[in-house]
Length: 270
Image 1 (tube, one colour):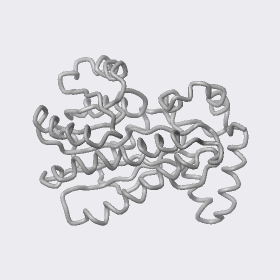
Image 2 (spheres, rainbow, N blue to C red):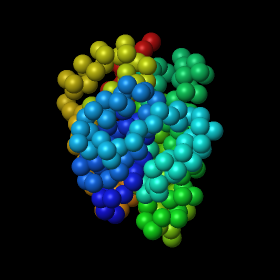
Image 3 (cartoon, helix red, strand yellow):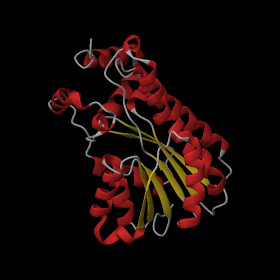
């Protein structure tokens, strides 16, 4: 699918990977609707878009509020016009704690943003996308959605639900104009910890930067995602870490889980 002259929604468009997706879509000639819960971040995205800002519309939206998402869909279709694509990128992680140490408020927040936020946008826009000559949905899962990651189990469960939702949609929409792509990134250099309310986790960022496997730059990850859309790919793994673990998991599932658990030992807050 060619992205030029298409109108595409990007959630989490205020920073990190979402911002890179917005900016690169604009350079490809797309009209972009960027969603974020932070007005300041959205204004920064507008500033970075420079001469392409006329092709960018930004909206503050809490994707966990189902009523607001449904009303938002009506607003966008009236103010912007037909939508050709939806990229569900917004997400947060949990504190690096074991399930027994997590309160239900934190659990609900992670699941509501990562899974129900994605589902809310799909439910709001899918009927419209099905009426387009061609359209697409891209859902961003995670390495945690493929493999068990101690200290990020609730996040992983939500992202695993996103994975299964995406694969189910691929089957249900097979004979429709709507293509569906699953994105599974490994480590990416983003502000997800800060955006998740984990400002005190900076020391773990230092550990990450010193690790053998370097995180993928958001610009590179965005390039890979947009390329997968243009080529109608069904599933893309981004990063050496997730690709390596995927191979190990297929051959030695137990070993892959032990490697991840060992890597996470120093990250979990006791």
